[in-house]
Image (cartoon, helix red, strand yellow):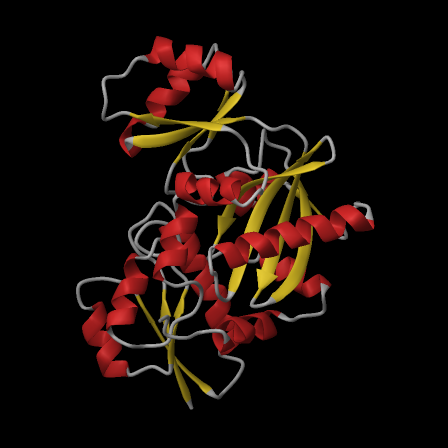
Length: 306
């Protein structure tokens, strides 16, 4: 019987989603009698429980800071235990929206222009607005540098810019990004395979936290996506390129805007959700890959990074 330690919950703003993901995954794995499962949170006694359980691998279902930013990965590396999803460096690069953007730009992957804004310095809002007018133009997207699930993301114009900005003061550093209109399309990579793409049509202003995780938001999921074969291959290839550039493992999901026949990579997620409303399981189902097959494929890619 394979011992699988499931790591979920944590301390980020995405704690609730992580626990829902874990519940969905445990429900599937329990159908297969070959697994002995233990769900734990990364608390003060985490390492002690890990050593006592002696798992074959850790299925890391944490989201956000401390869970997919390289922190918990470094702990698992030190314990020399196999774990799912991306390693220390890949995770830390992907969650840092500025660093990952720099890598994408250097490697000719189109991504929205941005300005970094720090609350740690003396705030000169008038000068920041001038920079936006000159380099980005309104509307703009405000987002924390190292959060996921669209936590703290705002689309704002010049009129409500200051009000939106002040809502993000607790994050210290944020990105002010050029707003790209157009279609929202996301692409998933599983191991070394291009899993597929899905288009989203949110009823809300954009695919924010509520649109992602609330059935009441009524976001329309479109699959197959209406794209030419050339553009279909192009978006999959960009997602694979980004996955490889960051040296990701397991599954990753790249979020795009498609505007004027160009794909803009917004960000790459190394640990996408696995809830009933999540996109990667939906893409997998379309490809006749069941939820349990998807989970087991992710587990097969688990290793100790070198």
